[in-house]
Length: 114
Length: 111
Image (cartoon, rainbow over all chains, first blue to last red; front, side, top):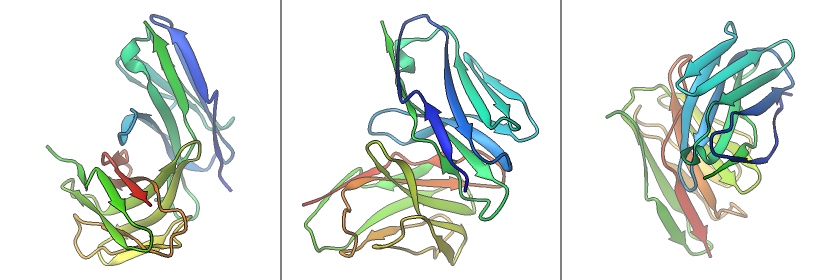
């Protein structure tokens, strides 16, 4: 059974620092992996989607990497800003079984201190 | 602008009453989903639909029901059989291998 884990559960950094959020998954049979951002009381916003054949995706100050063989993905945020404070979730889309059912991690709560 | 609209944003109900949460999308996506989010537990899948007039139970379907009569609409009914209905409910949609899109959620409080 696919399981997705995000460590740490919470992270606090000073403004301007570069940081890395981690996502691990137990089964490498995935179509893709997505990173989302969630602000308090809001829905999730898709940040980056990495297909299984890709190694990384970049959008502005965000870079996501994928290593299927080791079951790991990282989200790198460069030059963090207070506006980056939010919960970040990753999700994998499995290739086996019900392939339209994404499996979510429990998220990392990021606080960027001014 | 294309997107997913969930209404209402806040909903209050008395215990024992059924309540229906609305989800409408204009993205022309085939697949739609309902998730429940509780503090510290992440997202749990309630029901999903891959095409009109078809839907499947997710991981926590007991006490919930859905319908998919139109491509753009996927309402969720929280019945009186749901033991702990107070939660944040999120609707989402997806097409092919594209990103999953979410609505802004409905916070349901049952007293």
